[in-house]
Image 1 (cartoon, rainbow, N blue to C red):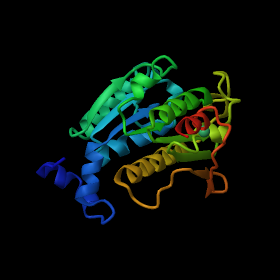
Image 2: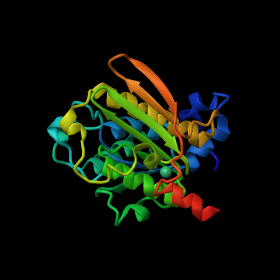
Image 3: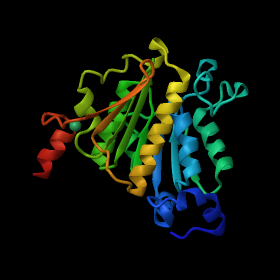
Amino acid sequence: MALSDDELDRYARHIVLPQVGGVGQQRLKAARVAVVGAGGIGAAAIPALAGAGIGRLTIIDGDTVDLSNLQRQPLFRTSDIGRPKAELAAAFVAVRNPHVTVTTIAERITPANAASLLAGHDLILDGTDNFATRLLVSDTATRLAIPLLSAAAQQFQGQVALFRSQPCYRCFVGNAFDADDCDTCAELGVLGALTGTVGSFAALMAVRAIVGIQPDTAGRLYLLDGVSLTWRQLRLVADPACQTCGRLDATNR
Ligand SMILES: [Zn+2]
């Protein structure tokens, strides 16, 4: 996938990096990435991915902009209140980088549409704000064998992890959170600048994964504490009884 003169100029600061180079930039251009959620995480990740030259970006979000979103979602302006986030994010991307082909899905991801919306992507970045949706996205990604970058922020805590088949997100959180009524940042609060940091970190991990920058961080959980201002990392372990990737493992054997 050749780069035009305009792209060579646009991505010059990438191409000069030994870990990226022309080959890495071509991998970014060839990549198809789905971002689920154009909220606090997505509002930071989407501009970073568009700027990085991801060739095809799918933005999935069924929400409209609410006044209380503006504290943490810099993609949106006060005049955008009431308008669909997916469409606004896609319009932003189109202006930010005309080399990116954007697909807008202004609807909520559900068990009925998840597989068809996510199939055909090389990477899924999930920045949704509730466990039920995150588990749905993770289970679908696992079944479709698509790597998943899962990012979340709540109060002063952020967490980001790349999952590639095993362990999966469900190995990490278990089955207790499938109900749609569990905690979201609406109830607990979240620091606006924290969601931006976590979204940018998720975009960094996405770019690393697509370019193939080592070491591979799949299965490691990165935790940001905005109070003590520290990052920690944990190695996640696969749950042999996991109802998603455990079964997949049994099928493969
Ligand atoms: Zn699992």
